[in-house]
Image (cartoon, rainbow, N blue to C red; front, side, top):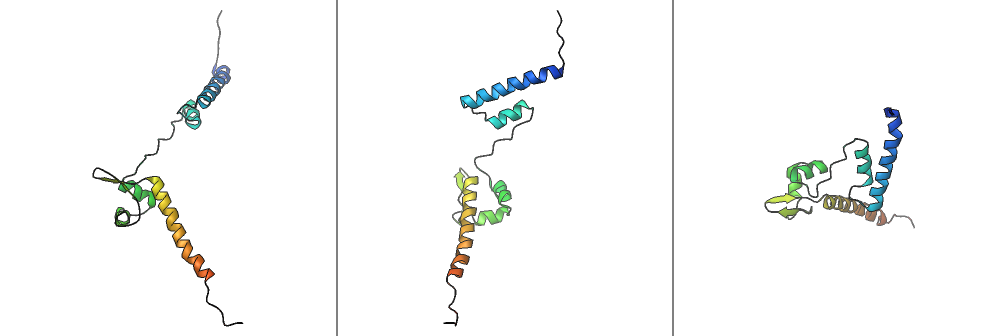
Length: 124
């Protein structure tokens, strides 16, 4: 007995196997997350993991400033926190985002207080 299958016959079977594998991964809490598993099953290379810390050049590029500007705003010269490992100065992306949020809040606060404390008008 000879069985002949073409790709159209195999696609539903492959989809079901992949669906079951993804369900097993999600259920088991496997470190491979569902998005990466789906991308892998589809033959797409998953995104590279983001680095935990950024060097001066990458952090400056992320902030759209020059390396010198970032260096001048890095602690102890400025307010941007950094991590020193050996001779390297590295930046935590989370710290950069927090610094941006604080800078935004500080820029908005004076404008709000100016509106709240307006000079009294001559009317009574």
